[in-house]
Image (cartoon, rainbow, N blue to C red; front, side, top):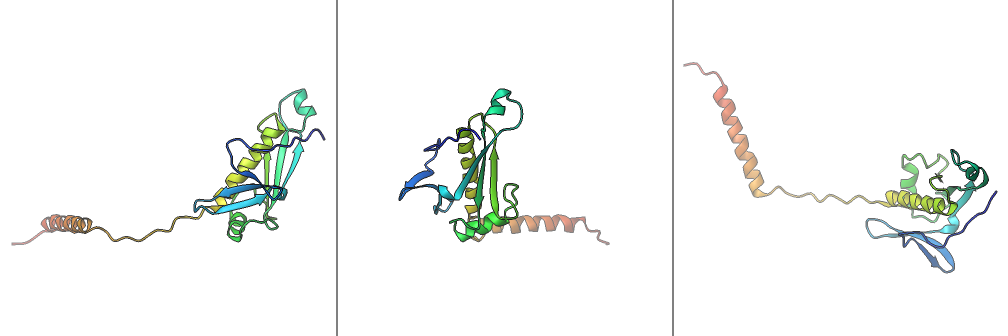
Length: 164
């Protein structure tokens, strides 16, 4: 099948950490909640890339496919349910995330890109919208609104036809 390369860290990311001997992806959502996913839950496979590339594309397995089973994962329930209801072509009806990357000639780069895309998907699913706080209109805005209504009403009254 070709060589399989292993990596230790990802560029521009604090996401890989080693906890109790196991590599973890740690993601923080917009509320500051940390979500950790063990790397063992991610399944990687390398395949041959398609398209132009000559002899290189025929000899190397540089395309990377990342698979992640949502149901059997250690994600929090609210993230699991959000992922399963998301309308995303990378999530199958069986509840599996499949991300295929063929961007680079290097398997290592493609693997890093796949993890970045997976991380973005989880961040999107873990996003909790900010609750709206209902507020009262200010006193001046109420006065301005009533004043403009009164002016408009006077204009319309002036248009009406009156018999003498």
